[in-house]
Image (cartoon, rainbow, N blue to C red; front, side, top):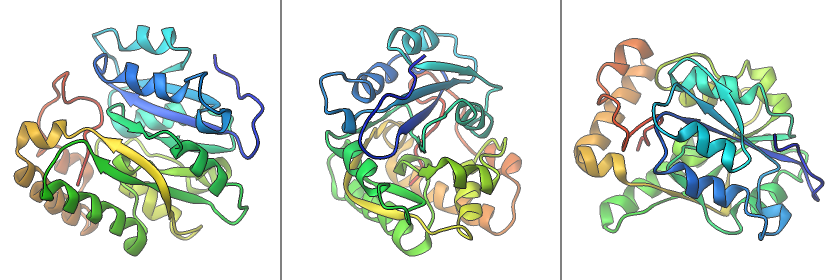
Length: 251
């Protein structure tokens, strides 16, 4: 177990939902728990919430010193199970194929040093070249600023008290992040933390086709907001594969 350790500012706990993420998880955990970094720039607690991986994901989590939560497969259920183990002041939810740049967690922690900040997002940067990806990044950042919605690949961070007050993640198969963002809005709108950069893998876009995946996700998001059930919409997502598993990024 990695119990919170003393650090200036609020303590920061990270929850990472996984499903067959042995290829991506080591780099993220190494970044979050790097003892060579300033204590302000690493996590005080890391919980890997696994949905039944058949590969070495669980062993990797324990080998890196993360706590392990087991949950039924499904992003909402996994995130809820992981959050239940976090005792830190602030909860940060990250996909396994993301990577906070050096300095990002320190900026995030400093921002939550302001008592009025309740929830936030990080600046998204996709690990791929091309104008299309730059447009997707700007769209994700603008969604936080304008609509107050934080999707999973933008690094939602929220004070534990507000997370509990909102009801936390619900066991939805998809759009659990959008669902929680909407329930947090009456409590406080999220702030985009400038300079807190979160690198996001382009694997999902590259596997399915960047334009096709993005248009599909926009359509599904609109359908969910209009009232379609997450269970029905989830059928339109590509089936799980180890290289594109667990929590896929959405544009």
